Length: 525
Image (tube, rainbow, N blue to C red; front, side):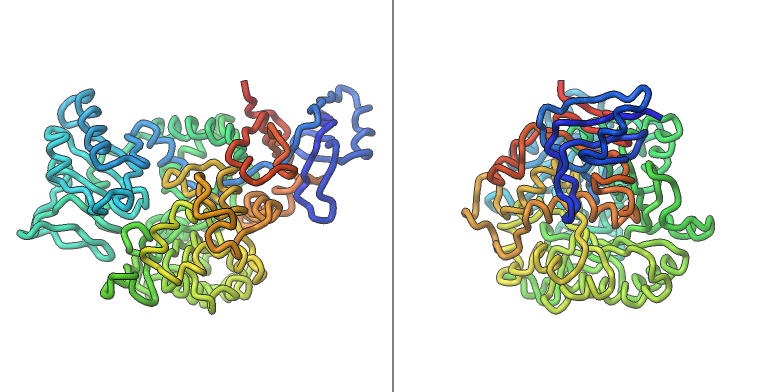
């Protein structure tokens, strides 16, 4: 067994009872001693010592909600984040000039809320930019999609095509699709896009993995579908999986999971099955989050449920009875209440399961204590808050007091697990930490105190959500998320002491080295 002594470091262990150390002894993939107790391990045959030059070290960070396959594949798609309407159309036109006719043009990240008129894209304007290529562009929210006429034809859609359940097709006066597809209607277009091969998915995951490690992320909770699970297994089998993956699958996989008897926690410390992901409602951007009261200025818009309450309950009870934990997407306050009600009903079937609500973006104050009461993990993404401020104020108004309510949820006794929702947002965990402790955008708005500052967290609390909290959600809290004896040696060496400087420095932090299971998996050049 290889013995390594990491010394001369400012090590944040993450344990409130013993938060700091100056050296670690590692035996293989685990930490075996801290500080003075580590010196004895240096005498072992073959032991090596590394001087970290006083650098700050933190536990490895986990992104507890990421679409890794989608992110990896999207590296080849148009990145339309922050683009104006004209820039979106210009990017499509330029990409069309490089592709043979009939080849799909894919893109992501556009946001009509940034445009002066805030109107959605249309098939007609996409046709002018790319008349000979099918175009499909996923909105920043990932709950709306814009397509041109070629894509609509490839999907076989027409005026007579009905809206799918829990979805809506935008329409022209004659009933023909106008180019916009919301919620489940997005599948009408996406099902026509040629699916990547397993090798292509594996290559996309490897490309994503490099970027994640370089950001200090040593593990992910992946929420993409079955192809990603198969590709992760392929990488693991050939020793190419360099980070930890807790894999969640989608609703359509439930019958197979139950038939195979696959239960949450199956796998090993590198790749394990987390559970089943479901969607309860839409999103803030397209105003499809399910609300207890209408969106501001839209008296008839209560958003959309993407599963009927009876259907959600039936699926949840089937999964829980089969030993499968649930992670359920909920944005609006109505959706969050519905999911809490559902998990309360499913809990007696398997009290040990670690169920979680994804996003939990808008909560009614009466529902906040229920997370702790029911043992439901709040899986949230801090960067959403600072980028959604204007939309939340516009569509939720005064209800925004309990939007992204990290402090209220934590103080109620619940466990937080933080992630990014990339590629909907960037996956930089240090920007996530910045958002959690300041509630300010990158430009400092809305002011020094931040947006609803009573919901800010301390740096230690936010770090815990990216480390131990994420490990708890995966059922690994006894061996992951802290830098203590017996824990897996996943850690990040930083370029500065983030504890001794103002939180603004979090926007500029760069990992210098990243270790997973006692091996350096990434180092700055």
